[in-house]
Image (cartoon, rainbow, N blue to C red; front, side):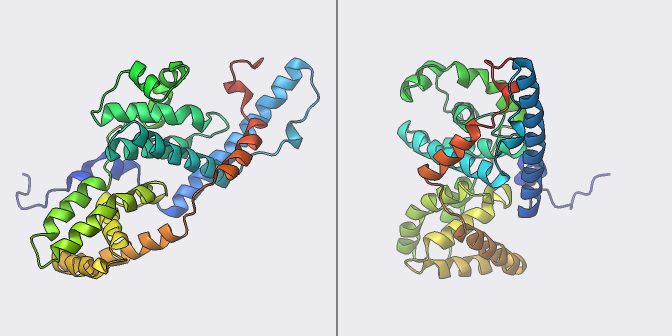
Length: 298
């Protein structure tokens, strides 16, 4: 017989995100390094086969392949472009965040040497409009972004969905941030300072979305960290600390420790410049998998 007094799991704890898409920083790099090593071996083999097919000189062993860090940097650059495009198309923050996290999930187990981010990121954005109920026709999507063709966007839908394990729903920090904003107003809070801080919370979350943080921490933890970050200038971060102590009781100390770790990780994140992305992209052109190129002899 079921225990009627048993604590019901939080909705997030029952989600696919909680169960399948949370990692430690070490796990993320283990996965990425393994993925890149396997990709390099596979591409080298395919390049050699193509050269034998075309009776060309073997240059595969001389090719310089991308590192896991370079793969991540190129993906980060395109995640930034997703934020710009979402704003251009007047999509909500939810659509933007979902698209960026789709990119993170897809390229965690897939390599840019098989799928170039410039092809994948548009499909991620189009899928995000569907899952966040901001449906837009593929024709309008193409017109808004001035795409010469939307064929690639549609062609990659199934491939990207496979990379996401067909798990489309994303929990991001925007919803809990709004919940905390409302809840803070019920206690001894300087409402004027709260509203001033909350205006900066979205920007703090957008910054977090571009890092590994959404793959490591829970949305509510990121939301509170965003309040702390947004409240540093006006001193509201101290009121956030008091709110956490009052609201979370025995769990407050561990939660504050998690928030400090989040803010610490965010400090070491540096945006990828266009120049850096260009250099990596040039290197990538020389080590793309010929088996994924429709013009290849393979």
